[in-house]
Image 1 (cartoon, rainbow, N blue to C red):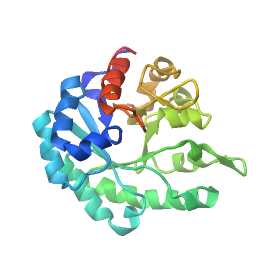
Image 2 (cartoon, rainbow, N blue to C red; image 1 turned 90 degrees about the vertical axis):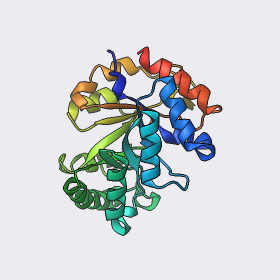
Image 3 (tube, rainbow, N blue to C red; image 1 turned 180 degrees about the horizontal axis):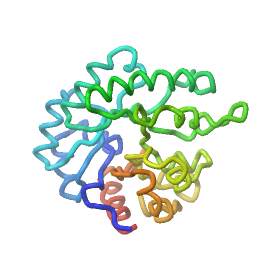
Length: 246
């Protein structure tokens, strides 16, 4: 398959070291590589309005921002306002607190996501959840992630991290088929032979097989991520090439 150019993005957690030094310059260089969208993760003392300006100047579109779980209870209205200022369409909770990573805790999270999702919808946004491998743990015959999949699809979607889904023992292609339309954004992150993180296309994950069912999953954005690149720019360039060659 060919990924539309405006669907190829960078999750900015990958670039956190260079963002801290030069946020606007980093966005411009990402655009020069070929990226067209970004997901915000960390503002480095810049306001939402400033980051929106940096992105506009670079010709990049911000599609989402990661916002901590606690803000749903403490500061959700401001978080929603900021995401709208960024011009994004999705507000993403990147993880559930460690103390809640059990069946009871995920049920609490599902209730919290339901209410936060209503507020996001009222603000013209969509709430997404980003997974890690531990979200696919099983307790009393129930996969924790499935508790969240049971939340009203109008109120909660998912930013599926492909590496962590595979690490958790799940096939992204099957998730796309079993839960159509639930996965508008992806973290495209490859896995090295030893199980560590790798640049897209340089590891062992079969992205072509996954992406063959991406339309069923409702995928719109393919956001590159590497959790700990040795060289952020080399990783960004290599992953862009890898993603465009799938």
